[in-house]
Length: 241
Image (cartoon, rainbow, N blue to C red):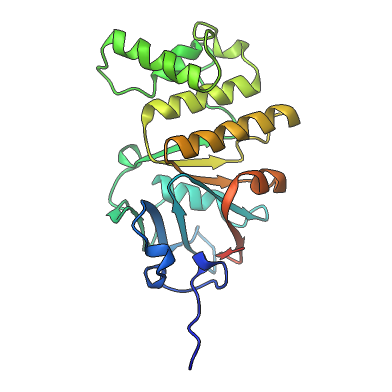
């Protein structure tokens, strides 16, 4: 009897249609990337990305500098257009959607806050336009409390520590209520103690809100502490590890 190869999501192979895997085709909401192909100008061999990310789980992508990790996140966010392949969230095709319409939030190493605005005003940017004032204040307060920043809403972002700024950015993500969270080296600028606290908050929020969280990090301890599913980017391909 011929033994069938297993797909990348089974951690034992690097190429297979992900739909062929019973485990990766279960009914829980899933972000599925299959043969997503892209090459920068002058790049001889294109990237070909295939991976899955489940809800309530952190999926880590590691690789050498320049291996294509940020390119993958830019493709998922819609900032780059692939030449082939697919991105689906719970069987919904995301490729036709522009960045602002994708169910994706992006958290970078730099906190991307407006320094001249208060913490609350920065969080409010995650709310839909036209949200009634009283409702907005309620949601902002609840989001800040959930990330451990109750009572600092009126402080200017410029006065906050690095860890507090990342928590404000996470509070804004909560109000956006988008099911996919992309993390691009989000803990690199934090000291060790703060990094541990913020990554634990990411883990808790991912589970609580059923996010599909994709983490790009050079720090092995962050990957080990957070990731339930891990990929290594080698020669333009994702290998499950």
